[in-house]
Every structure is written in structure tokens, then in C-alpha cells.
Amino acid sequence: MKKLFLLSLLFIFTTVIYSQSDVEKVKSTVSKNKIEGHIYFLASDELKGRQTGTSENKIAAQYLANMLRSYGVKPIPETNSYLQTVALKKTSSATKTIFKLGAIQLEHIFTINSINTNYKGPAVFLNYGLKEDYKNIDVKGKYVVCIVGSADNKDLRAAFSKTREKRELAKKNGALGVIEVCNLDHETASRVAHYFNGSKMEVSMQQENTDEFSYLWVNDTAESISTSFAKNKEAEIELKVEGIENSMVYSQNIVGIVEGTDPKLKNEYIIYSAHYDHVGIGKPVENDSIYNGARDNAVGTVTVLSAAENIAQYPTKRSALFILFTGEEKGLLGSKWYVDHPVIPLKQMVYCFNSDNGGYNDTSKATIIGLGRTTAKDDIINAAEQFGLEAIDDPAPEQGLFDRSDNVNFAAKGIPAPTFSMGFTAFDEEITKYYHQVTDNPDSMDYGYLHKFFQSYVLACRNIANNSKTHFWIEGDKYYEAGKELYKK
Image (tube, rainbow, N blue to C red; front, side, top):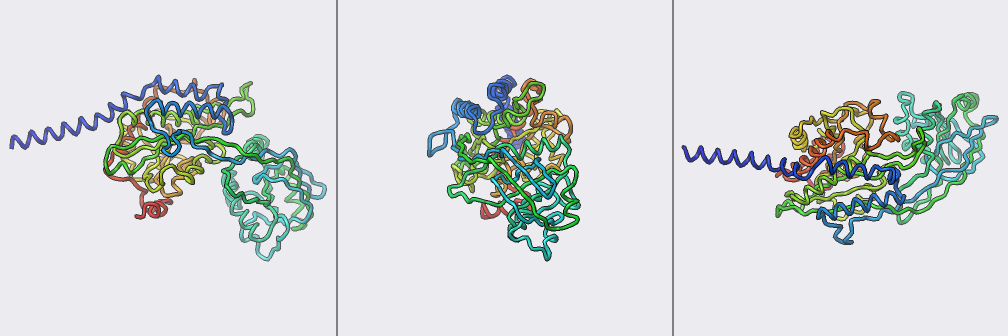
């Protein structure tokens, strides 16, 4: 009995030491000074907001690649480089936009689909342009004019989410294009114009399909268009969009690998990802036009660097794939390119632990978008607890955050993919005063909190990578079936 008691005590002691060792490993590599140093460089004025396609974005990429190299992380096997070239098509903004309907002439137009257009001919007013509005209406060879959004939800985000459905309906019925009519105040219109009317980028395909279908929003604050069409559902319009040009831009993802230690589990990879681009130079606010992007997403980028340094020094049972994406701010382009051009087969990627941020308003928490959607929930919660933080799930589901970061391109392929974010309990003014603003500078953050936040992420990475169980989606999740297909479950 005494021998059995001593063996039990030894087992408990060994288990405690083991669990403590991962915490100590994290503490040994993640320091507040390193965090500050990386963030102050990436979010410096000299990098001018790291916009995709700029020389400053390339400087950031080289810096990140050199960091991986210095840690001992291995490059992409086929190319022996840390840089994966991403081919993008850039579309310039229009130089002239005009909409005419009788005596009505409007020039405040938002180009959802950026193509040059010169049209003079019939347009049909179709209420909200949804399926029920097409009944017994001929729109072939004509433009569809409709109200943005739907009768039950006119929120801008909901309205934009309807554009794909409206586009497909109009094309199916033979229309030449869609013009949605909105009524936005000056401030909102300026934000929408900044988002839609600036230069755009998309992933370049080897065989480009030229889409001549035109899609625009017209801001009609006097609601004169709706009034005119109230008298006659079909009328002659004139539409001009001029000056749009296309060109090729080449940017880069940064990719590195650390092989796992377990003979079997090393064939499974955990992806640790973040985007390193931001929105660049924009509208000046108090003589500052550089959108530095400290929170979004220098923090996420350096979170992944911290995981890379730690796992390179103390490899985990599963292998690690570190990916820092370009083009997230242009429409998740770097991650979209990656999932179509993986350096290792996607079926070997068993988890993607993304890190993206807009800001924080609670330094006692880490907010994980999708925390309860995979079986890794406890591994993440326990890691945060070790450093005095509470891990919580998405507090603002109305924002659709899970589907707004790079993780969603992996989730769509079936790979479990939550996003680790700084602590916020609501998408409130404390978030929006920094999110995509010139105020998002490195000297406006709490680095004592960030130290705990980074440590929590790195320990969660280790927990997931060392767990004997391969994590998966919770049954019934939106991406559960895609995961079953990918892994042939």
C-alpha cells in the first residue's frame, strides 16, 4: 500500500510539473519588451499603414520573414523562401459617375462592381429587387432600379449582404445591371464612398472572366428617384461610369514551418495565422493621415510571431504552420489565395488558430470569436486562466465577425478556425474610436494587458497542439459538414 501511495504521489507530482512546464516555456519566450518592440515597428509612421501592394507592405513582409528566420522556423519547402507570392488584380476608382432620370441628375454613386459603363435606355423599378418583385415583370436588356436592403431590414450591413442575391436574380432574369437607391446622411455616405469608391483588389485568376454586369448604389437624399418611379415603373435613364483601369499587383503571404515531435501527430498541422496589412494612408484627421493599425492588426501579427518563437524553441507534438496574410483589408485576399495554393495539403491542417483585432474594452478578458464552435474550447479557456484572463465567446454576433476575418476561408474548407481577439464585451465607442482610425497608434495601448494576452494565446496554441485529441467542429455547426468532407470523417 505504501509503495502504491508513493507511485500515485509521484504520478501526481509529475503531472503537475508537466502542466507547469508549458506555462514556464511560455513565460521564458514571451516578454513585454519584445511585444512593444515589434508593434512599435509594424505600426510606425514609416510603414504608412502597411497597405497591400505598397513598398511599406513589402518592408513589413521582409521584417516578419526575417523574424521567422531568426527563430529557426523553416521556410516553404518547395521554394526555400518565407514569402508566398499573391497575384492580385487592382481596379482603380472611377474619375466620373453620373446618373440621370428625366430632370434628376445625381453624381453621388457608389460602385459595388467597378466597371466602366455608358448606358442610355430603359430601367424598371422593382421595389427591393427580391424574388417576389420579379413576378410578371420583363427586365431583359434593361436596368433594374430598386431600394437598398429589404423591407424588414434596412441596416447597411444587411443591405450589403443582399447584393449577391439581388445580383444573381437580376442576371438570371436578363438584366444589364442593378442600381440600388439609398438615402444616407453625409457622414455615412462618406464612409460608404471610402469603402466602395477607392481602388479595389481581388485575387487574380489565370483565366479572367470579364463581367460586364454593372452594380451601383445611388445616394438620393431627396428620394426623387422613388417619387419619379411611383408614377411609372419603367423609364429611360442615363448612366455613366468612366476612368476605371485594371492592373496587376503582386503582394506576399509569409509562411513558416516547425515540425512536430510526435512520430504520428507530426503529420497533423496547426495553423497560427494573422493578417499584417492595414488600410494605409487615408482621410486626414487633425493633420494625421496615416492609419497605423496597431490594434488591427499589428497585435495579431505579433501574437503569431510570439507563438512562432516559442514553438520553434519548444516544438509541440503536432507540426506548426505560421501564416501572416496580406490583403485582408482588401477582402480576405491573402487567405483566399492561400487556401487555393496551400504549401501543404489542407487535409493535414487540423486546426487554424487565427488572431485578429479591432480593439479592446475589457482588460480582464480575451474574446475568442467562435470559442464554443470547436472542441478546443477548454484548451483555450484554461490557457487564459493561467495568466489571469477570462476567455469569452463573441459578444457581438450581429457584427458577423467570424465571417469577416481570414479564418473564414479555412472554415469554408472545413478546418476548425476560431479567432483570438483582445477582450471586448460589446462593439462600442471604445472599439470604434480606434477601429480603422488614425488614432490606432502603438502608444495608445496597455502593454501590461497585452503581455497577458500574448501569453494566453501562446499557451492555448501549445494546449491545442499537444492535446492527444484532434479537435473538430461541434456537431451542427455551419462548417461541420465541410469538415467531415475534408477529413473523410
